[in-house]
Length: 226
Image (cartoon, rainbow, N blue to C red):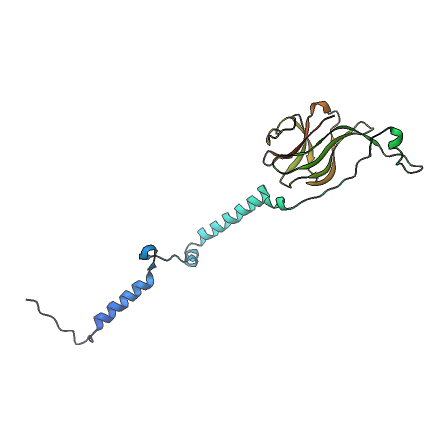
């Protein structure tokens, strides 16, 4: 038969109960209720950053690098920024007899060069809404100029102006081969001139294209018809 031991003289009554209560309070401080009332563990971000500074720094570096890559490569900001460039017609477009088109010359001065329209067509939308007119002009010295008149399209990365062997169609990716690159698009809005290389056989080219070289897609295309 067991005998109950009286509390020690050095321990006041209720000491065991006080320590038990204190221990349970400390356990509650270390945990918090998770889903369904189950205890969950807290993960303070500040403490994690202090314990693992290398991992935190590497994550921040990767995040900044990713944002920089998106801004440089995709350049989404250009979709909200328009660039307007307007250049004068390099002469007078001949629409009637030579005697009529030369009346604009100033007294005592030489008349501006008369330009003959060889090809023209209106732009059609491809990847982005595009309007305007493409005109191939023949100068008196024999040089050819592609003029984009009242162009309006979206801005974007690495936009180029192509003369293409491919007839105008709704295929966004059809113009990646068989072209002459006339240079970077000067502005996504306005009227601009682009020199066509000497010796170009114009009959071999069926369309003018606003081409995004970065993503190999056409923004707009204009058929070139006599």
